[in-house]
Amino acid sequence: MRSLFTKILVWFLATTFITSLGVAITSALIFEASEPRRPPFLFFMARQLDEARGAWESGGAPALAKVIDRLRHSDRSDVFFTDAAGRDLLTGKDYSRYLPGTPRPLLGILGRRPLAHPSADGRYVLILLGPRRPGPFWFLRAQHLWVLALAVLLCYGLAYHLTSPVRKLQRAVDRFGRGDFSARAGSRRGDELGELARTFDQMADRIETLLTAERRLLLDISHELRSPLARLSVAVELARSDSDPKPTLDRIQREADRLNELIGGLLEVTRAEGDPAVKRREPLQLDELVSQIVDNCRIEATAKDCSLRLLHCEEVDLVGDAELLRRAIENVVRNAIRYAPHQTAVEISLARQEQAAVVLVRDYGPGVPGESLQRIFDPFYRVDTARGRNSGGVGLGLSIARRAVELHGGKLSARNVEPGLEVALRIPLLRIEHFDAARQREKAVG
Image (tube, rainbow, N blue to C red; front, side, top):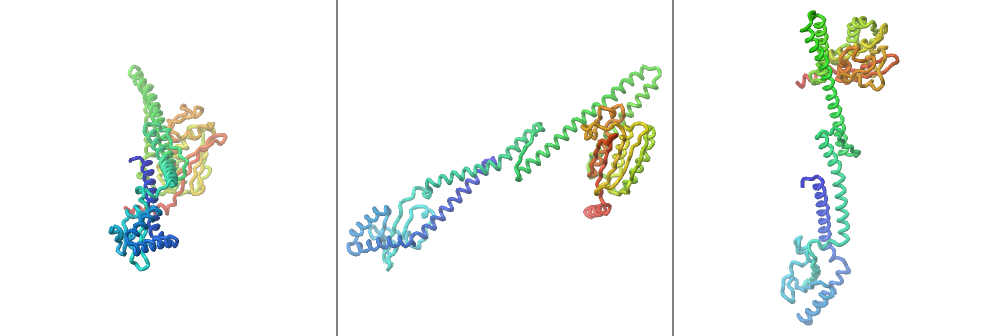
């Protein structure tokens, strides 16, 4: 009996049966104790006792036998006329177990029903022993079967209601474990089983998304590595056969730098997704960090024939990993410089908004198609327009920025502002005194 459905059904049926049996036994006990006290029945038994007593005292055993025989046929019960000790005056048998006040076992109560009525002077007792009850379930009638059938039906419905979502979830888990990552429980119940099914669906969605992203990332990495490696192989062969290997060696150096940049970006992605326990958390001035990044990127902007403008830089202090935030903001600024048209400006601002620091970086370039606004933060993703492979980069900068911001509980988003693209880094603020209190608690626990 390993099935949950069977267990629930059997338990409820057993509970119903035991309850019904208890009610029946209790009713029998109450009936046995109360029925002799009903006035009409007492009057009827008193008349029978007086009739049997008169026959015994006037005609002896023969006269009593006739009366007893007539009473047995009229009542369809066994009738005994005994003395005060319970001994039958006709046969001499002992029926003291049926006398009033004598305790009777439970099985006796479930058997034949005795009724005893003593005479006023206590010399005689009239005992009526009801007809033998047919088996232990004598109390069941045809009407009771309908009630039992209804109880069985209700127990079956309850067991099915409780176990059907579990079975559906089991099938979904089995399909998911076999590799069908689209398997979902799809429950709409509002109880705990429904919550369990929805939790599984959320977990399955997350796992499917992660596996899809991982597969896409592996494909992108293999593609990104294959191209420079192939060019390196060709350049090496050319260098071996070329009388002037300097141009070929320069090309080898460029491809090696590209591979180094790619590997460095992948390491940054790995660090951004590492164990949160090893993240550095320290108080820092975000406005000073933004100013340093703008100063550091001015040379790169000048080389691209554009300029950097720090429009607004509000004083903001928060707690976080300074290196991760530096890399995140720097990657967004460099991405804007890379796609900024000549003789235009890249605008940067920092402000507080609802317990969060918001860094805005805007360029005046061609923007991004609407369907690609969210995908530009995926690893190796490039838009097939002006922001293409020829513009430079390996497609990891914005991905690193997004993951660094998310590790601080923030969000990275982008929108077209016509002209150009505006990227917003929203980072929740953690007050330094709260950080100090949390650090003191950690030290106390340690």
